[in-house]
Image (tube, rainbow, N blue to C red; front, top):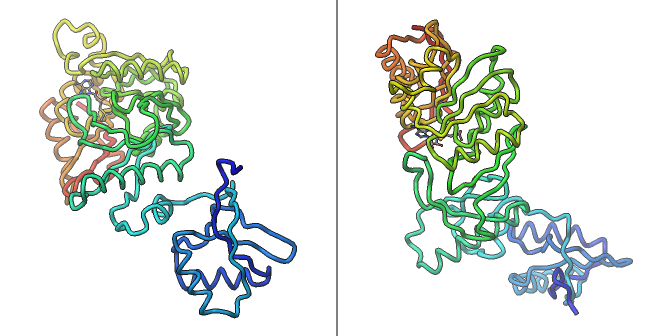
Length: 380
Ligand SMILES: C[S@@+](CC[C@H](N)C(=O)[O-])C[C@H]1O[C@@H](n2cnc3c(N)ncnc32)[C@H](O)[C@@H]1O
């Protein structure tokens, strides 16, 4: 009886000395077509080697061998066993076997990995029938799990990031429907529900930069849009500071609290489930107690951060402090434009730019705009 990792397939049986000639011939003739099944073990006998072949291309190989009678060979069928060391490098490699004729430019080149979850986006597939589209998407999703063995669930992005909680709609394509996972980033761990709270692994370097920036002992910091806590927690793990972390989304706040304790920074981060604007309201106790006391503010809400500069200036010390500001800014000159807009808003609240510590394009956001990161020293 065949075990689950065995399969009956054709092998070509060659003299040991002929093996390299045969492999070279196949590569020369077929390029990257998966004629030889490297995912199965080669079988070695005393003077012979059995090379596993792809059943799909078997007729092509047979006619090639007929034209090349100089290679002394025999075709035999036998049980193939999985080569445990074999790894597919890309989803395109896997799809060569399952969907050999699919246009390669439609295969997603990248996808986000958050813990055991992959999130993938597809190009426009409107030229295909509903059935073909779904088959392709499921094959891509399965291929992602073959390339990355730690992925248990593959979701498709089915909307833009939207609403005040900055969430997007996700649809399960393959695996277990469990949107909660544990994600490691730099030296911290995060429990995240990808459907209920915002998180992107694409800011990993940004968070590293901010956490590695020189921060004075005892600084008071506000993370105005903290999400599940990636900025706050990575700063708190490196510096002796106090961080007030706010988020309006109750689910994000729940994960923020859990992540604070998972990373053992309870004595440094104080989470609040609030709308940061509310700090300005007269009678808001938290706002009153933090007014004019803050050294550093993180403002990672790129589409609206400028609208919250009133809150930032209300919280900052009168002598000034540092703002880590994120904005989506139109191309070209996205950086200059982002600095100009920030300055205009600061002037309105009687603050000004003292020094631009860092101004960078983090990534492209749309064909016409970029995500800009600004580390700015401001003074009143
Ligand atoms: C772009 S996400 C950034 C989250 C986090 N900083 C990160 O890097 O993963 C923005 C977050 O701001 C929160 N948010 C939006 N408006 C808010 C407001 N008025 N007050 C507090 N939080 C807000 C959203 O719920 C969301 O979690």
